[in-house]
Length: 299
Image (cartoon, one colour):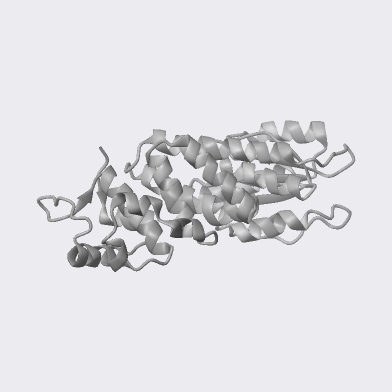
């Protein structure tokens, strides 16, 4: 059984630890056992209960009212269905479905969100914030790798379906963008999202996967005459590695446009006409949209 600190609960629910402590004292809502060092720890059942409280609280209910509700009343509260624009509610629900390995409910919520807010807003405001929270807990050993893989595989399959649903017909004459991650970078979902963005904006892409050697990319570029080199890095490697990697890309592809996106490239400066390094998901979306008009200068 997992043990969560109050800071873990804060990171998962978006409710400050100070506020949680006040609720415990005032309403006796959750009183987890304490360790010999007087630190409180919560188990899975505590976490799921607090997640329900968080959803109701972010939906606008007063905590004094929530404190008097039974578990069944919390689950059936109509206010959860009336907050279609409240991203925090949906992030929390995905976390609860992940903890229960509830694939049906997880996929159903994603389907509803696509219908109500569109795929772009769903990924930007719900899916990626959710992945950040689960990923942080997984890296700190608070949730099992199985739980992180469970939801990641669902999201991955949803993205692949979205990519396959793009109907634009590409020709060999159109500029081609090669997508990959550097060697030892195995996070795939952000790169798939980029592939979806570019295809949605009618940009011809060639997705060659994760953890790809530069020599392999060179071989692909030579065979396809690709115009854009697009790589994504999440893992926080040293700045020296990043600098050397950028230099290797520029040396390997002197006549190509290069995009280096993701947190791992946050120290990279954009170079007009040669290298682009978007610093946020919003900048990344803007860049992908700017490539729509392929008859003009690409950057």
